[in-house]
Image (cartoon, rainbow, N blue to C red; front, side, top):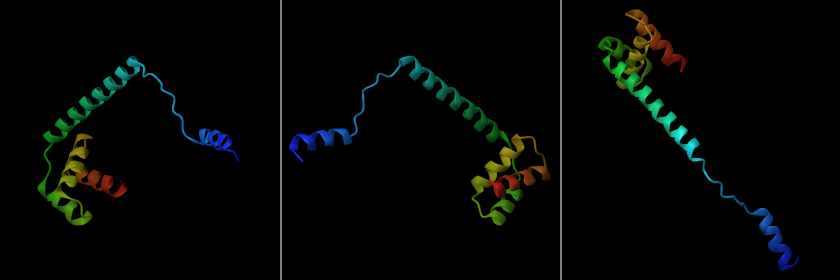
Length: 100
């Protein structure tokens, strides 16, 4: 094989990436979507922080499922945010952790 053939074959194998201009409006829309998603997460985090959970429920989840206290509290708060109350909140939290 000649050097010219080898160079031609090498060119066909190497990756070539064409420069494509990024559409500024699409980039702006993507950034807006990301920032609005973060705002939704912030409001959910604030709602979760305002929920109170029973220390006994947290201790039960930690001892039975061997998760950290932070995980147990978060799951209990999420269950409370979904409308569960009392024993139903503990049951919903346990179901989430077992099925996750």
